[in-house]
View 1: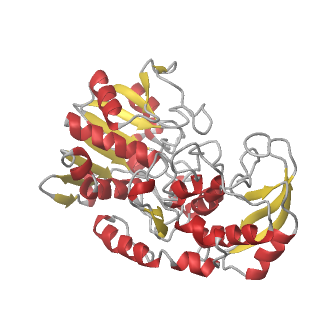
View 2: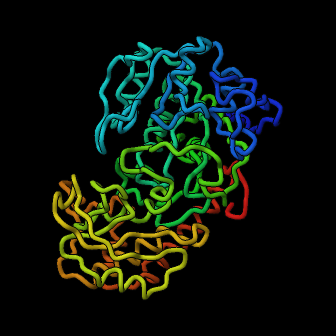
Amino acid sequence: MTHVNRRTLLTAGAGALAVPLAAAGARAGEPAGHPSAPSRKVTTGAQREAANGWATLAGQKVGIITNPTGILTNLRTIVDEMHEAGTVDIVGVFGPEHGFRGTAQAGDSEGTHTDPRTGLTVYDAYGANAAKMEQLFRTAGVETVVFDIQDAGARFYTYIWTMYTAMRAAVATGSRFVVLDRPNPTGGTARGPMMTTAYTSGVGAKEIVQAHGMTVGELARYFDAEFLPADAGGRLAELSVVEVRGWRRDMPYAATGLPWVMPSPNMPTPDTALVYPGTGMFEGTNLSEGRGTTRPFELVGAPYVDYRLAQTLAAREIPGVGFREAYFTPTFSKHLNKVCGGVQVHITDPAAFDPLRVAVEMLVAARSTYADFAWRVDNDPRPYWIDKLSGSTRLREQVTAGASADEVVGAWADELAAFNRRRAQYLIYRGPAA
């Protein structure tokens, strides 16, 4: 467990939470003798804390920010486990986008309600600013905030901003902040352009790069030191990260041995998470990003797209990826019930695959091939959604002007290098991509 306060930065020894998983029994993970237990390579922060009897949370009034991904190896949520164990005083659950139980679609939440299984109050935290979050914490009487959500590794995935808002509120209330860490499914390599202050929003609230390459625990350390002093008037009174055991920055999610739970309805597989930091940018165009299909963010197209897109992209011979000519009919979102031509992105080598490079190649090819290509206009003084996703007007202006993919990717090289230098001191996990 990594523990941080205003005066010290300490990494706890292995003994603090090195309790065998079998000791937790069936209630806190797999029972002793479970046949799959020996092959499990990675242990999440939640599993380690459960095996330790939730000791980090003892004697505190606890508010939990989680969703369906906050599970143990027995596939039960940490909230249900803590509640039934009776050893944690849970005073409230705080639901992010899509809600605590995951019943809401993109851009929606479950609202404040009483959870029928546990009887606990679930507060609607999606879209809450720091003042609103502070009010929710004070209403619930929170002394310790617990964050346990599987992130997807992209700046425009909103859970990390829910965490940051909660951190700001925790500074105001003097609450402890505990992150039960999980692997980053995209790995540990940072990629892409930096967010600029002028284009911050709910899909990129602070200045980090598009694919940050950090776990939520590492991000919490970064946010605490880099952003909270200016935004909240000081750092957290106490930040603890219950670390993942056995994860390296170059480890694909499939090698972790952990089950994949959809972090949101349009993130069905680990492959979706790998492509999302790049193809998520198609939300800022008039092409479908595959919402309303069974392979969102892997299928990209529009009614005006034909075989030429796949043909152009295949000729580029981009490392780690192949492009299949594909046709699909979205059942919701863009181009509802219309046949779309386009491509399916097939990852052929996860180690060589760069989602930002791939997406830029796709944007450049679509823009140069089809006169009907257009950027999505948003009702905002900053009218283009792609600018909020990419962090500035630069990418849109370059692609519109006919820049090559090499020129677009090269434009963010210096800011990415600066981010890598800055984040190094906050990293917990090592490996070739550190």
